[in-house]
Image (cartoon, rainbow over all chains, first blue to last red):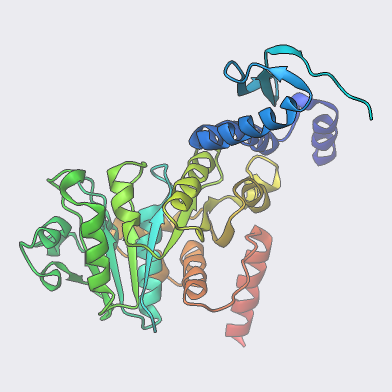
Length: 92
Length: 266
């Protein structure tokens, strides 16, 4: 019985032990919770992103949007960065 | 010894804050420390009934902070332990009757007479929570192995850190080892992994808690209560002893009891 239990759980993802489901759901929800608890975190990251990207692209810094979004069973960092133009790269 | 103010909090309601406060306070008093328990759940006071002291209340915390009486007049002496006192919450006033500043003054005043000041925090993250943590040196977070409770505990960790309480420790309450074993309950490592805070102790699910609450006698007074024994171990850890976190494997427990019985029989 125990072996059968184990095998069905092993081969069918739907039958994942419920504690693993709980742990994964928590992990995802906490990414969101923690980000919304400290908007400074998102803003800080936004500023750092701008700093890096500015080196390569001419971007519209005012219109830049960064957010965390749920996609199926993972969290994605979604950034919408309007590009005004390319910087000339000078090869030395 | 320097006195310490510990706030017992959780975010979510019903996870065992009050039970934990009553048991840890009683256990510390059993170790001969001078202990005062403060119920800050104004409007929903309960620590008095869990301690079995509900018939002795004359004044409450609001009377004390508003100067209607001296702290000593409001403090209720425990039935069993000389060094244990309770400052009950007010039942008829609302949460805004006390401010964080007043709480801080109150706990500071109590430091003179007590080794441990345990503050039972109300559920939620509003005024009552802010009051409860105002004077605290350390925080104890109580969580059960459920998504809702762990999520709220995470929120509390963040709020405590923002308030300068960066050394919060976790008590995992109502752990059911049978369910953990069959993969239907998060285990200790799962929860610690997610919250990344230090573990103070684990309390197993135990029917004796219901019985002891019915009677108004904290489970630590009952030598056969598994939860009571767990709380006693936690109290010793709070007092600075280094005690291993117990593994609540049912079979181990039964074997241990069996061995103990054999030893007694000899």
